View 1 (cartoon, helix red, strand yellow):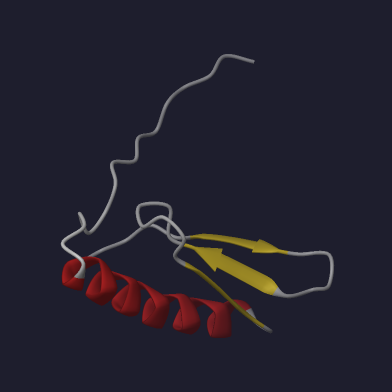
View 2: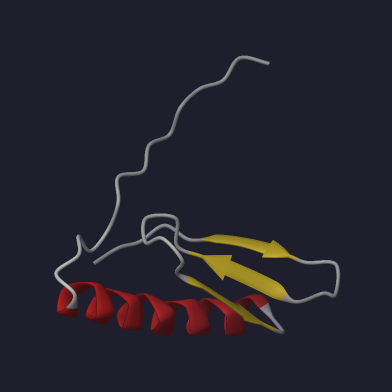
Length: 68
């Protein structure tokens, strides 16, 4: 499965990666590569837990245009 992730660098220099289509699925790392590896594992674990609990695996995400 393919998932979109977001990645930011926080004020301490840590990279924080999140999967918007899985609520609460977030991880971090000292480098972008480490954060990506960690969030991949977090995605697998989140999907397993959600399946065990009978929850939808993901939520709907959309891209919307906002005029500025």
